[in-house]
Image (cartoon, rainbow, N blue to C red; front, top):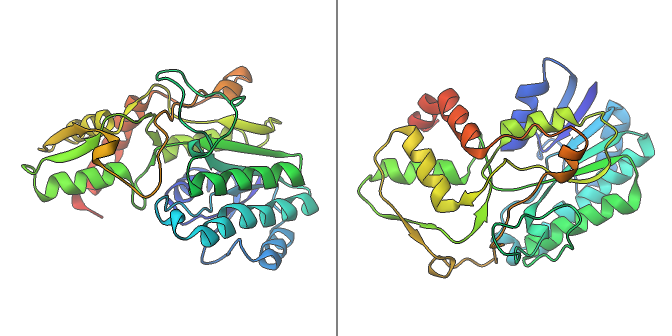
Length: 290
């Protein structure tokens, strides 16, 4: 298939390229190469490439910065997504768009997961911008699939697990406080890329959740990862109130991949299995800090 990947410089975009480049005809554009907030540039690119599927990994993901930079946040996550949807609709290509648990309020009692049928109620500027992007797609086209995911990590770019490793290696005796009352599923970008490839031409449309199976807290995830990395570390659990941030975080980010399972399309694995494979493949690179 011919694929156009936008936001190809991010951690998910890079893993999509790594996974699919030998099996598909790929045009991969970073956010510098294609600014999705520029409608004419998006339209021209889609018309020139003529992809079967556009995979949109481009997003403004600085959750806390979104609280003070709401115009920039909306420009990318809502208006930019609308530009992609318009271009896809005009060209007749399918769109796979990546969204987030932040469109939900996270108020359900743990461990009850959120399904795709739950009412949306974002509690942050980032969440509101991503919801606006979802709504823009639904208003403009029919052949689309929005994959909501959460707690991403990968070998490229910055993420929670790499931050934990950096802090632990800088001073193994320094006690690191990690939030232990937010719940979700650490999701490896490579497995999410495999899930994206699985749904390229499956016919499934609308919204589907796509996170790793099982759940834990940030503290549980950090501890599991650092133990797998076989490094010395000192972690202590803390509450969200002890680690204040500008943007509110959902307490419950546990997503159930109901629609993917219903259609026999789910390839997401237990989060522990993914962390184990991530470490097996990338331990040396992670330790080197590259």
